[in-house]
Amino acid sequence: MKVIGLTGGIASGKSTVSNILREMGAYVIDADEISREIIKKGSEAWKEIIDYYGNDILLPDGEIDRKKLGNIVFADKEKLDKLNAITHPRIIQRIKEIIDAEKEKGKERAVILDAAILIEMGLQNMVDEVWVVSIDKDKQIKRLIERDKLSYEDAMNRIRMQMPLSEKVKYADYVIDNSKDIGYIRKQISKLWERVIKKNN
Ligand SMILES: CC(C)(COP(=O)(O)OP(=O)(O)OC[C@H]1O[C@@H](n2cnc3c(N)ncnc32)[C@H](O)[C@@H]1O)[C@@H](O)C(=O)NCCC(=O)NCCS
Ligand SMILES: Nc1ncnc2c1ncn2[C@@H]1O[C@H](COP(=O)(O)OP(=O)(O)OP(=O)(O)O)[C@@H](O)[C@H]1O
Image (cartoon, rainbow, N blue to C red; front, side, top):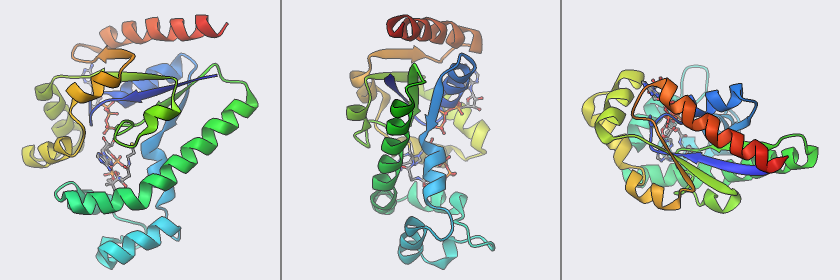
């Protein structure tokens, strides 16, 4: 079973690519979804986050207010580093468990690991191939502002907290260009997926 790391900057189109790959039959691990799971109310990470950021970070139901926490950490590198220190070891552990379980089942031809900060987290060592979704800065900003209803400044803060695309592509086995329409991206993914399937048969 091949493990493919799918990465790229925020709002570059990784979820769009993952959804197309799912349609084509891929099994996708979504690192954002795992990061949501591991900070659920009552978890160890939840406790550590409250210890550091205070009770103000909670919603009335006791869950972490992710929007509020995002606004804090994406504006302050030190605070983001602290959140990373709390969450990353747990996210990595959970990803390892899922990959091992899939390998044991031996059912999947390939597993896609969708993670915006795959390289920053050192996860490139856990995958067989790295696919990077590429997008020019102006389109990335526009799509991020539209999708998350952010100000220009907040969007830029989020982008600045990630490794630049020019660095990420150095780790890439394949670069997927998402600067055109969905049909264009679909064509590129079809080719990559066919190659994965053929190699595994
Ligand atoms: C800051 C948090 C609370 C914001 O939550 P929110 O629901 O608003 O956003 P979501 O989790 O869907 O992330 C959206 C995007 O932000 C970017 N992002 C998230 N965490 C980080 C980070 N630590 N560093 C840089 N970019 C990040 C990614 O591009 C991600 O796809 C949340 O992102 C979080 O807990 N981050 C720390 C864990 C982490 O690193 N997750 C990313 C794994 S790839
Ligand atoms: N080729 C495209 N043309 C137009 N819009 C697109 C295209 N690809 C993606 N989008 C839109 O851009 C936004 C960002 O895409 P997406 O959510 O897939 O990014 P992402 O990389 O998964 O983001 P994140 O890092 O936050 O998880 C979404 O609103 C999506 O619908």
